Image (cartoon, rainbow, N blue to C red; front, side):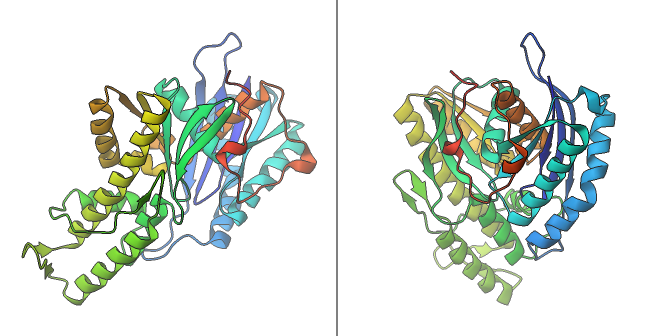
Length: 350
């Protein structure tokens, strides 16, 4: 079976084509095309402008994906799209596009949970069997484990997602959004040398990032008053923008490692799968790897082709559901900004 997947829950517009062999075996990625809406430095991506970007590029990306996959419309079994969660206007643009293609091509629709798409693509690419999942992106931060045909949320952020925290600090520093603000924060953090004391807020299995963002923003404002750097009162070291990025990353990632380790202990798992856009961060992977190895475990992660929002993950998760008989009727082919991971019945797993 072949599925076409459309993803556009945020500023990434992705179109993917995937093949599930009839006799089982690994999924075959036939095409994985993506185009990103990049706002000017110091600005975030607004829903209206992002939706306009998606509408402008969707037809080109679909044509490109079909051509790269070497297939025609008749080869497609179903059209999968991101039902949620995400930003309302971009989601709506992609949902409407999927609906139009379904009507034009006479293909079934499958609405997909964005978070489940990340998890299933991560499992397929890495081969992780039953890991604890750390899902970290611009809109979501969750620690997840599978049980009884549901992806159960063991812990999550109580305010802003970790990716949103990093992105907003990039705007504070007026860092470029190309290729991504979080990526540019990561590169600056590699040059940081001084770890500053920042709020560390873990509440059981949950965490918060708004307080640390407020604190680091205040330090950035202090640094802006003297661009040559200010002296830390405790160590007398000169503090730079790179030190701020380094301190922010180290602190928020330590919080994520802590709640992930607690989930591993609870379910008795030795595997961690990191998914979502922030999962590309090499330092996060390194810190999680240290923790996992100390527990005799292993970390699974993918590269930016699959960590960052993409159409192939929607095609893959949608096709898994479609093969169990699930379809989304046209009248129900809506989208929603709130669609929790544990709302999905994962019938394709025993």
